[in-house]
Length: 114
Image 1 (tube, one colour):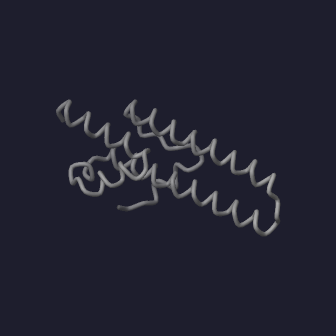
Image 2 (cartoon, helix red, strand yellow):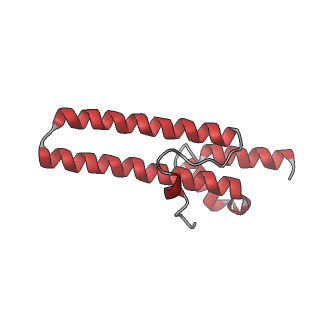
């Protein structure tokens, strides 16, 4: 693999965490789909996006049912911090060319088959 290709793979893996830019690149570029490293990071980022938005939906539902605005605000803040941790962790792992999963959701990213 040439350095240029290696840098492109690294860039695609990095862009995966700027959802959906990396996902779109991955889906339309056949070379990216063949690369295990890029696929790993795209799948992790999709898992993070699903988990992040899923947690927010659950918070909205619980808030509506229990009418607990202040606590919902704290939960939303915690979810935002977790999303930021996933974002930074993904970027660092992709820049270091590591295939390490994101905290709490590593297995979720492995479930996707696209």
